Figure (tube, rainbow, N blue to C red):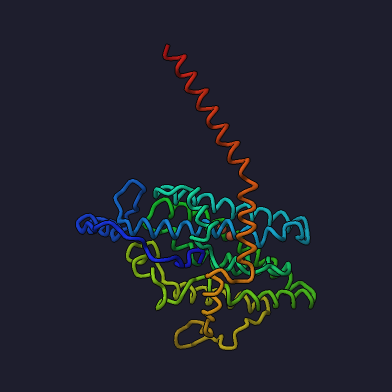
Length: 334
Ligand SMILES: [Fe+2]
Ligand SMILES: [Fe+2]
């Protein structure tokens, strides 16, 4: 979901090496983890860099819609929980940039590609958070969709990504709980006005959340290779269906109505059938024309510029420490 397989075509790859590729694929088939210093096909490396970077950017940009509500949370308890959640998302971004760096790209390059628009982040973070109920819906549905997508990534064939996902998933489940608990407070214990606010939030977020799983399988350009390499374990449509099956009963417990007249339980398949997704909206948002795309990138650029002094200070400190250590080593050697 944070990894919607959105980016442009792979750049030209060096000539294939069929023998090494066969050995590599045999390791993947045997469920061995691939580590940074192991040989890997360039396509595998590029796919992972693209996916992990997109995931990292999504965690970082994803701090904006909710960060917006920290000062307006309705109680101290809510404020503390939301603050912790938004900080977790920042941490997720940092683990993921580190995982991407093991593939030979630098965090600086990746951040630059986000800021100049060459790399994407999840479409979901281009929607506005209008009311406090949106914070509940984001935890319940956006983090819920993240969990559905990310649990299988704990078994991804690339070791550093898989290991980062284990910790991230534990934190995501806290995020989902805090969101759902806000929804319970609004819908089951709240006033009619609070329940109406929750329904309005669900109405606005439901379809964009379904789009988080990425294009449908017929239109997803990266799915086949990613499945063969065991980067992905389920297709976009499979994950979307699992998410709908898990989420509809939760919404019904809240007494909410999903904004989809075609949503109904299909006795023959045992799954919830749902209506057609408006893929033109998805393409519009991904290509930069969603309700908040410009605002999010503007905020990100400003935050990056304002952080320049911190980066400069950290580098200056590291250089001084290195110089001191070298001087001490020189004295010891004399
Ligand atoms: Fe996260
Ligand atoms: Fe989260």
